[in-house]
Length: 248
Image (cartoon, rainbow, N blue to C red; front, side, top):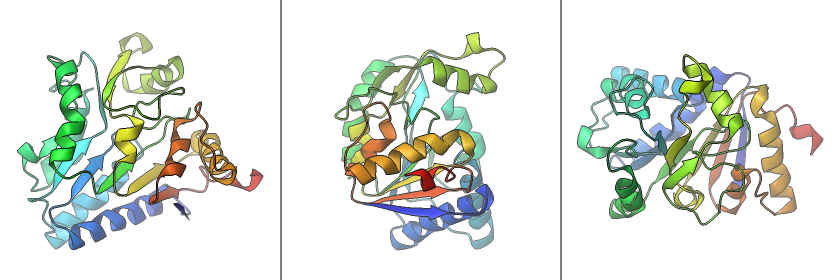
């Protein structure tokens, strides 16, 4: 079941997303959060930081698992998702470093990827998984054509994803061509999913998601449509991302 929330701006949408996360923290201080990187969740993370500083809400018992990491990138590299999480969230909370897990992209990355889902299971699963959305409908780095039964693994990035991510690099040649990503089955194993999508470039993927819900059939070429098989999904959009829903 998908619950749709459309906000008038990215800022208001992000505030609503933060409220959902804070409600979970209040109910379950030792919750397990699945985290995403990129532009979509960054304002939500800023809201969580402000709440922590203002209200002293503690993350000391929280465990986190990130969706993905580039292959061949050291954790201290500024383009790594380890660095992103450190500088955009973890440095500002009282979360324990040993309770934060991110796929390993450099040495022994295959071994770590193979153990990742088991590690999540040892923590009794993810209570709330935060997702961004690729322009081609990817979630995590599960590109079009991904197996719905996939778990954490090495994936090849599509040309469209490499092009979209090139804005974070000096040139498109510098963008890694592979990543470690939680699989679709890994994502759908979370108890609740929160999908954030902002801007007109995400509108078509959102249209396909709700088209799939209407047809009750996922589209293998639009990975986010597998979310219709989950019983508890909240989709939060700004007006631009929601613009094509009227066409369904």
